Length: 203
Image 1 (spheres, one colour):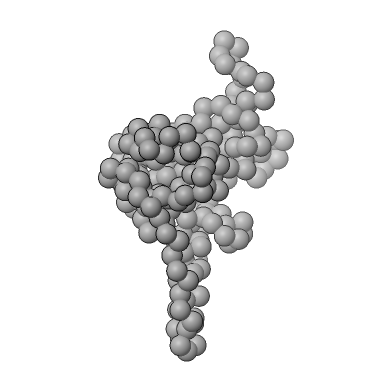
Image 2 (cartoon, rainbow, N blue to C red):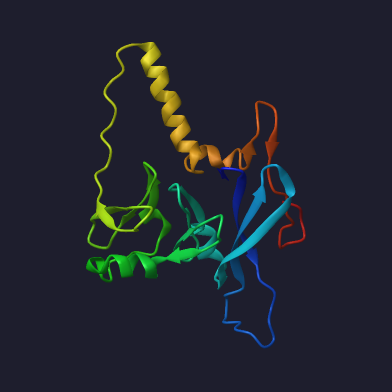
């Protein structure tokens, strides 16, 4: 995802075995966020979001949720908000501190979090949905947006389709992300990341 002059890419990757470290059984993978300057792709930073975890849950859940104007929100083993300038990270602990009324209702699965209208949105354990102010992180009730009214003519219909496609592709959601992972720079230019798979093949 492109945020201003930065490209952000979330990567699930194997962690090396540590003889003197914490190598709990099966927790051999981690999640890193790669940040690259759009003006110079040779420069970048790598930020560990999940130091160690199990392969399948991380592969299934890890994803970038979107940007709320202040933080890039993503999910690895939990939800995190990252200030891309300072690299300051906040998590569910900070959300819970600011919103004690939500108690232990947090559900740590990525499908219960999204970005909508420039705010983090979370569904909690009792089914209620909240959005969070980017500045204060304070929760407020969230209402699902109403579907658009039927188009009056073909021109308006095509405009609705265009807006829908833009919304679905902006944060890496919807089927298009499986066919065009990366970032379009223009009509004919595209940038992506190339890595080596754990089985020795290229991918």
